[in-house]
Length: 104
Image 1 (cartoon, rainbow, N blue to C red):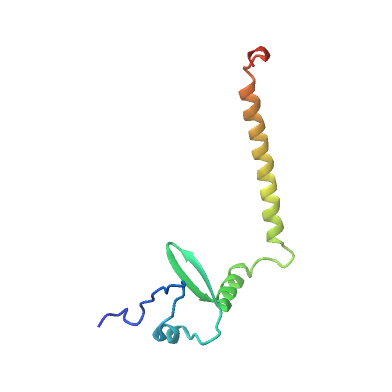
Image 2: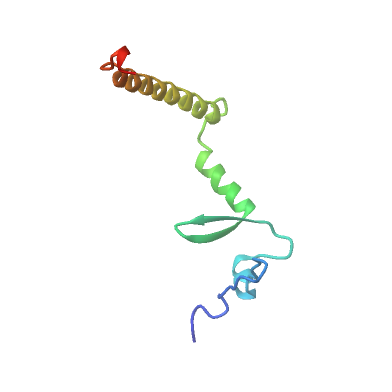
């Protein structure tokens, strides 16, 4: 017998999928359970919201409460934008350096 029997999922005309009973049972899914979906390496991954929250809390649980990661990210992005603007200004200044005002 095919070990994937009962695991095949088809996409309906309206883009809907039905999760086979065997998979629902294995995952402990019931009516009304909320799933979050994402594409990972070309695969559709569906997870219970609470499993995602648990995984993220585990991953970031060691971050001190007074540390705001979003503010750090914004600060880093602003600094990168300043550096990029400076590089762009240097590039433009270097490109204009050899031009003669009468050559326009």
